[in-house]
Image 1 (tube, rainbow, N blue to C red):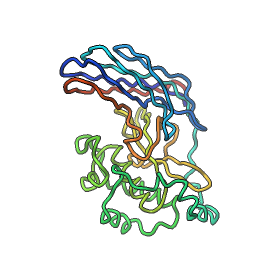
Image 2: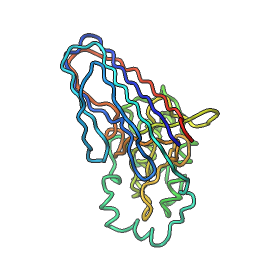
Image 3: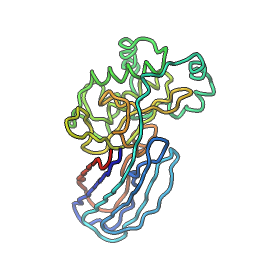
Image 4: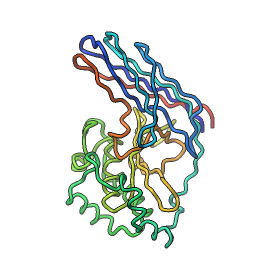
Length: 283
C-alpha cells in the first residue's frame, strides 16, 4: 500500500518571537517492510535544515530562524510504501526462543527497553493489578497479546482526559486517554515482566468504514522484541498488530525520545494548530 502524508504544524505566538531553534522528528523510516519514496519539509519563515540520526535511529532535522516572526508553519509531505503481513498470532514460542529470552545476554542487550522511564512508570500496586488479571508471564508472545487486549478493553479513548505530559501511573486510574497513554501503560507492564518494549510514533491510515481510531494527529503504538524474530508492532488503542496501515516515523524508550517537535524560542506564549492527512494513493 502506498500513502501520501501531509502534516502541518502552525505555531501562533502571543507576540513577536525574535529567534527560535527547533528539532523535528517527522521523517518516516525505511526498513524491511516500509520504504520512504519521497519527503520534503516546508518552513515559513523559510529556513535551511540540518539532518542527523539520533541514538535510537530516528531522523532529526534541526533549523534556526533568526528573524522576528509572529507565527511558524512547518509542513512535511511524505510518500511511503508498506508491504506487511500479519504473523504474530502464528508465532509459537519455542524452547530455543525461551532460552534466549531468559538469557543474561538478551537482557543486557535490550536493557534500555526493559528499564522503566518517567513516562512508563507504574506503581507496584498497579503492576500487581495486571498480574492478578493476566496471570504469570510464561510466554512473552501470548502475554503481550493478552495485555494488549486487556488494555484495549479496559481503557477508553478520550482526548480530553490527559495531556502530552501525562505519565502511565497517572492515566491508568482514569481508564481513559489517547494513544500515547495506551502505549506507555502497555510498555510499563511489559517491562515489569522483563519483556523489551519500545514506543513507536507514526501515522495511522483509517480509511472509510474503519473501526480504527487515532488518525487525528500522529499515532503511537508499541513494539515488542520477540527472541529470534525481532521487533513486532502491537497497537493497544485498536487491539491490532501494526500492519500496512501503520506508518512508522520513529522509535524510542517513550514519547520523550520521539517527540515530533522540540524547540526553544525567545518571546511570549504560543498556541499550536496541528493538521494531519493520510491518503491512500495505491493498493
